[in-house]
Image (tube, rainbow, N blue to C red; front, side, top):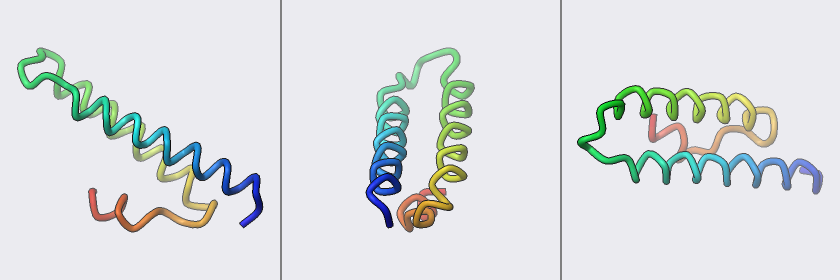
Length: 65
């Protein structure tokens, strides 16, 4: 893996961690909780598509589906 690919992969993994943190911080009583969770799931799916050609999808990501 080239240094550019490593940097891009790290960036994608950081973005996913940020999305997961936002999901954990959602209040259970929020009106739009389900809608927000669905949007975050879509963002994670898009990150999976982005990271697949750069070393593959991490095993932990697949297990969380």
